[in-house]
Amino acid sequence: MLTNLFNSRSSVQRKIVLSFLCFILFPLSLFSYASLSISKQTIRERAISGSLARLGLIADKLNIMASDLSSISTLYFSNSSLTDLLKTPSGIGGYEESTKRSFFVKTMINYKYAYTWLDYNTSIFGINGFELHTLYEGKKIGIHSVESEPWYNDVLASNGNIVWVTNPSSKLKSTVDDDYYVSAIRELKDFESGEMLGLVFISVGESFLYDQYRDRLQRDEQALLVDQDGIILSAPDKNQIGRSFHDYVQGNTSLSADSGNFTARLSGQDVLMTYNSVGKTGWKIISYTPIQSLYADITKLERLTLVILILIVAVSIIVSYFIARRLSVPIQRLARSMKIVEMGDLSERSAIDRKDEIGELARKFNSMVARIERLRDRVRVEEEMKRKTEIRALQSQINTHFLYNTLASIRSMLMIDKPEKVDSVIVALVKLLKRTLSEEGEYIPVAEEVDNLSNYVKIQQARQADHLRVLFNIDEQIVHEKMLKFLLQPIVENAIFHGIEPKLEPGTILIRGYRSEDGAIIFQIQDDGVGFKNRAFGEKDADVTETVLGESSGKGLRNIRDRLLLHYGKDAGMRIISRRSGGMEVVLHLPAADRSEETP
Image (cartoon, rainbow, N blue to C red):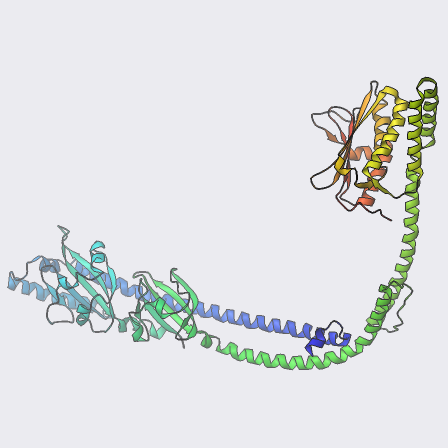
């Protein structure tokens, strides 16, 4: 069925049905697709925007937590009683140490109640062996047991600032009440000497971190908390805690920006992930929503749209069939008439007689064919007349005045010159008249055009005696190329009569012909005559083409330009230059083209 519809030989009726379906089905499908795509994009953008807003609130709360934990660590850092306990050698002054220790325990409790919303644990380790915990009362762990941990040197290098560490050591797990935790670790120093006295650990469990964000999420939305190294700190699935986020999620999981979103694959399904930064700690809070859940309503809409499209296609086929049947017969008849006209029979006329657009089209077709027939006959007549007129114009260039002067010159030469010289002038005149008056085509070889010009020059030199000198410099590469005949003679004639003859001393005309880089044939006709009388001489040659062609004496040059445009097109050209050194120059540009055949 589809093969027949797309077959170039199928009926107009079938093509109209197909076109009708395309004009209805394609825009409707495109509109449906665009609407669904825009809806999906809108849902995605709203989901991202909402998620980023929620993550921003969670990040703010975690930043507050980090700030409060930092404040707590600062209280310990600046507590003079703690400093005295850490400076006192272990085991000396037992009563005094016990008193200070009891006071400091009360201080720890006060700090704990000062931040009641925080669920944290404190551990203090002194270099002198002092050790105190808010939760653990077992055997001493000792600061030396953690000196080999990878974060230890980072804490020393932080110069008293907080370093956030995930699960600092398995030896410290008994000091907190959670399986997973993070600690804000800070070095304690002597204010006077700057000597290290110990370490303070402010730890919060994963369950407390999880409570900060789980109730702020939407339905089907989950979240992760990862540290600055991409290690998962908190997650709904506790088995994933401590695992690298980049190993847990497949796809582009870059978290380099402060916030953003991307699509990844998690647990075998595509998810939309958004993330925000917890600036105080360098952590990232990441939420993820399954794409299938996100687009659940769109999936239902897609199914409904598909059903509607199927119904529209069925109705369109039925309606388009009857419309196409109504239109196909007259169109086929009109197409047959067009084929007859295409074969060259301009007498064909369509017999369709209807009042609708097809009938109007048939009438316009008949009118068009009639006009084409009349125009064809007119063009044939005009072309023939144009050809004859152009040939007569060329032949008229050898006018009676020229013949009279030439014959008078020959008569004078018979009395004073040698017969050989007189004979050469007569031969040149005969050749010139023969080629001018012949009915040969418009295109001739360059060599023949130059030879014809040479005959004309011989006649003019016989009249001018030693007053005229003509030099030819024609490149051998172009002598066999064909060109429009009698292009050069009118230019040389113009140079003689308007440039050389008015000059008192002898004059020279140089005729150059060569091929340019783009393949065009260039002719340059230069003379050292009186030049352009209206030019104010400057330091450069001047283009006076339009000025000369606008004068009454430029009629012959205008004819040459018109012939160039007629036969070669707009790429051909003629320039008339007033030379700074004196005289004039005419440049002809014959474009690279097939000049092997004549125009009709």
